[in-house]
Each structure stands twice: as C-alpha cells, then as structure tokens.
Image (cartoon, rainbow, N blue to C red; front, side, top):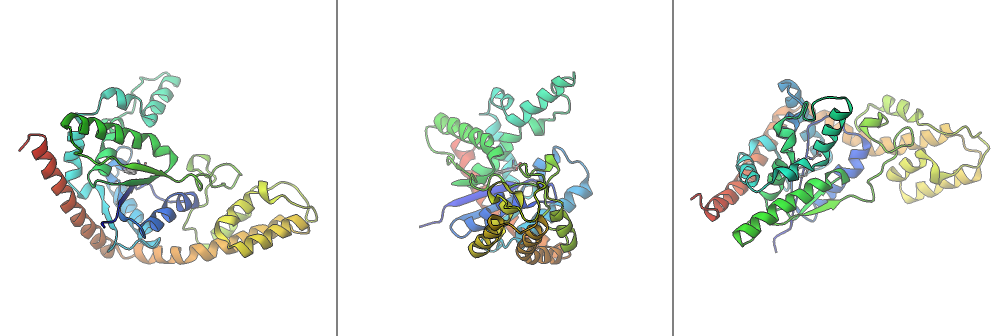
Amino acid sequence: MAKKIALTGIKPTGTPHIGNYFGMYKPAIELAKEYDTRYFIADYHGLNSMKDPEKIRELTYEAAAIWLAMGLNPKESILYKQSAVQGTFELAIFLSAFTSKGLMNRAHSYKARVQENLEFGKDPDDGVNMGLFTYPVLMAADILQFDSDVVPVGKDQKQHLEMTIDIAQSINHNYKKELLKIPKALIQESTGYITGLDGRKMSKSYNNTIPLFLPEKKLRKLIMKIVTNSQTLEEIKDPKTCSIFSLYKLFANKHQIAELESKYLTGGMGWGYAKQELFEVMNDTLSPIRDEYSRLIENKDYIDQVLKDGAERASIIVSEKMNFIRKEIGLE
Ligand code: TRP
C-alpha cells in the first residue's frame, strides 16, 4: 500500500531556536519514517514581508541546510523551494475562484494587522499587501497540490488548515466529486510549549529564545542567563516550576532526569550546577547538528542540487494534478 503523504512548509526567516526544534523539526523528521514527506521552503510567502533579494537567497540556503542537518534524507523525502514549482501558483489561482473574500477577512494574521493599524489611528489596511491578504490561498495550494493526508504544523497555523479544508470542500461540492483530498492538521500539542530564558513560552517576540546553532561558548553563556529564584544552595528546590529543569527534560535521558531531580529535592545543589548540567546535555544533542549545519552552509552547490532535484520531483506530481484539474473543470 502506498504511504500516506505528509507536507509542511516553513518560511525562510532565519535563526531557528530550540522551540522550533522540538515543535517542528524533530517531529517532522520522525514523521518521515512513516509517511511520504514533502517539505518545502515557503519563499514566496516570505516575500510578503522580505524584499531584499540577497537576504531571501541566504535565508533559503539556511532553511535548506537546517532541514538537512536535522537528518532529513533528501532522497526519501522531497525537499524543495516553493517558488520552483510553477503548478502551485496555477492551483492558487483556481482556488481563489472558490475563496470568498469574507473568509480571508477572518484570517487571524490579517485581522491582527488591521487591529494594530486601528489602534495606531492608521488606515485599517495600512501595510497589507495582497500576498499577506491571500496568504491562506497559497498555503492551501501548497497542501492540496500533493493530495496531502496530514500537515504537521504549530497551533498558530490551525486556522489556515481549516481554511484549506473549507476551500477544498467547496470545490469538491461544486464538482460533485473529490477533486481535492481533504487534509488533516497534525498539531504538536505536547511540545507546543517550550520554556524560554525568562520562564515564559519561548518565542522570538519575547526575546527569550535559545538559538539552535549557537557556538558552544555562547550557548553556555546564554544558559547561565536563565532566570531563577533567589533560593540558596542548601535549599530544596522544586523541579516542577523550574525553567532549567523543564528544558533539561527535553534533552536528557530518563536516568539523567531522575538523577537531577533527586538533587533538586535533596537540597545542596546551586543553580549554577543545574545550569551546567543543562548546558552539557543540550550541547551533546546540538553539537553534531551544529557541525553538520556549518558543513552544509559552506556547500551551497550541494544544497542547490538537492533543491533542484526536489523541485523536479515535486513538479512532476503537481503538473499531473493540474492536468487532471484543468480537464475536470472545463479548461481543456
Ligand atoms: N504558514 C506557515 C508558517 O508561517 C508556512 C507554510 C506555508 C505552510 N505553506 C504551508 C505550513 C503549507 C504548512 C503547509 O509557518
């Protein structure tokens, strides 16, 4: 039986942090064992907010190198750049004919922007381009072009997935057949919350992230900055409410976790010690990925080749799908 298809995209935005690692990359790589996976770099989505060609080019290389450094096998999975598969954009135009403007008005990202403009006394659509407004349509095309079964995404993308399903259903309803496969969102609930340096959720907007590829010394320095309470060395400490411990659990094995936990509960352990332990397990996990990333980013020809191969394989699938759709809808 053919494997099911999983697809996800990521905008080329640079500097992933360990929240992205657990929330996105790691589960996506795991998924590749079970599913036929198609992962892409959403460069046309990135263009909505990023207009510097050199920057887009560089961030796209970085995004590809990250996937590969994480262990994605580009022969088994398809890794490609969104812009390199022309059929996606034709599909997006088709989907547009079935997407009400009202649906787009309700998109969280667009609504948040309008709200912000109003608060600052600006025109509601200030700074909103059509790429941003129709973002969910292009995203639906990314997904529907492959007959994707599942789409692993963060909670923030849930509404976009619902919109994809909405659009696909209204098309299937109109043509009275399953022209488009209805996908399912695969939301990473369990790892949805990674603690940041200040104890709040790790997020770029809180400026409390631990970047994935920090050199060793910088990583250590950053970990030493994790905010703790003012308990003394002797005092018994609560692992459950501690940011250091919650990060430690992500990287350490069961045995290590139990050992550190008992140090918390016995007392006599200072925060400096706990931080050093955290640094060590983190560095053990991250240093091979970091080394591989540095090797890949110096090897752009290889990345070009991987992306070209991925785009070719993706294009074949998508153009077949578009040929089918064009006939079904009366364009041919
Ligand atoms: N919107 C996603 C994000 O901002 C990126 C993305 C674009 C995507 N197209 C997609 C994700 C298709 C999943 C499926 O992170």
